[in-house]
Image (cartoon, rainbow, N blue to C red):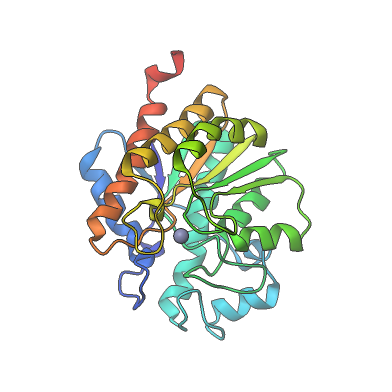
Length: 279
Ligand SMILES: [Zn+2]
């Protein structure tokens, strides 16, 4: 499994409630220990300001990159600003890889879906999901974004509406009002996926969907595993290239958040192992 990671996308020392800026480094280190044979790191290509402006207002992009405007963490940190082209770049590089080669790839990133056309929010500055979708557009007729973070992907909806994009099918489980019945959702998920009928799926495998999460919670770890399994099996069986990322996760015991991401990786490795395609 290719994981698109550069140390440039991790900022361990950000002072924020959200651990997401430092998460890539930690999760990747543990994956290399857990699955040394199956994980290979690929250096992503950072996105340019012009590429970010495919989903955002030009002035907003420049203000953020030049630290004239608060980022999604609510500060003017230069280190955060410097990491942002790499974070979105990781998702874009992983997306371009699966478009070309099929299968699955991972971008160990968070902090995308609350970023609107010209406004950040909720630890999100640039909407890498929408930048990746825009850059996939010349090669992919229909892009599905399945956002299973606990929270509403309001930034994604805002950009789709602002730019009147019709090629993106966006499903966010946190849509206003919030998700409720996990069993009903898991039962419906295959139908949701076939309804989206994506030629490429971008999957936010949010860990704040867990019941113990202080900012989220509606699923058990087992239900989250089934969620991931359904998504990855659907993609494998229907030859839909899939790229996934980490999204939220705020449990105080950070290892519990990492364990949820590990479960997603495990389900992905299982679904896309050599012999599981012949079922
Ligand atoms: Zn969230």
